[in-house]
Amino acid sequence: MTRLSEEHGAINLAQGMPDFEPPAELISAAITALRSGYNQYPITWGQQNLREAVARKAKEYNGIDSDAEKSVTITCGSTEAVAAAILALTDPEDAIVITDPFYENYVPDAILAGAEPVYIPFEGKELRLDPERLKAVMERRPRVMIINTPNNPTGRVLERSELKLIADLCEEFNCVAITDEIYERIIYDKPHISLATIGNMHERTVTVSGASKTYSVTGWRVGWAIAEETMSNAIRKIHDYLTIGAPTPLQEALVTALQFPLSYYTDLASFYRKKRDFLMNVLEDSNVTFHEPEGAYYILADAPPQFKDGQEFAHVMLKEAKIAVLPALALYHDKKLGEKKIRLAYCKKDETLQEVEHRLSNFKI
Image (cartoon, rainbow, N blue to C red; front, side):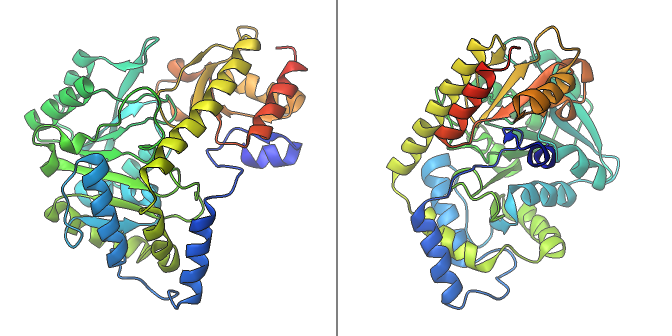
């Protein structure tokens, strides 16, 4: 859709990629690192000062105790952290539980590992996980369950009661959790809770996050995985053979980012809340129904009834309104759940979203 957006001169709401610059201090830190000799291979599992900064952040924000030497691995984005964890912790034919819909890389990661994806859907208007269906899935004794909160594409922020159920089932059926928390700072009305802080999940959770979304540097590709020592060692081995290491100067620069004051993060959430509310009002004015996101920066919406599915709606939006959105069908295993859905990313400048409003006002849905 990004390629088609460029081809048609459209506004790109299809990809979760900001059209604005990251904080100026972060750019300056990267330039300083480049000029200060940080241009060769890093320690494969990450520069020590960044691992220490991640460990401090995990303690202060997530409530997770971690050892920078033994538990923190710096990766090429959170996407690689998830892939490395899956490859490290599963054997061929193991089952992996994946929520439906899902971030697009989880299923290919499972396939690359030779594992079998097993799906648990977000259901109903509230997009919740059904406890009985979840228990039935866990009775298959999966090796891994992947949790993404705040969630892409639904915008759900899993509540403590939901995470407690997942924790109880993981312990009961000896399952490891990989939690993708890349949107952890982009939250609106609910607190972000890390699964690793619930019950005994600290020992059986790989907590994944990264720089891309919090600091608007999706092209830097620096993420991290936090896990107890045995799992961390396995992840480090896979990571080493996948990529050797994340970019050295950008690791150095991100030490600066992880020292930003609390106000940066409260301002970030407010910044995205305003964009969310603006785009929701635009969709309401255009008679497009949607799920209100609790976190992350996507809106999952329904194609109007005159369109046969989300793909047709996206095609017409691209051609006639010059707005690119993502047909969400590609993010669903159960195609009936996703056939009418589209996803819109609102990590865009205010003037970009205002132009979306203008184009939709001239496009009679």
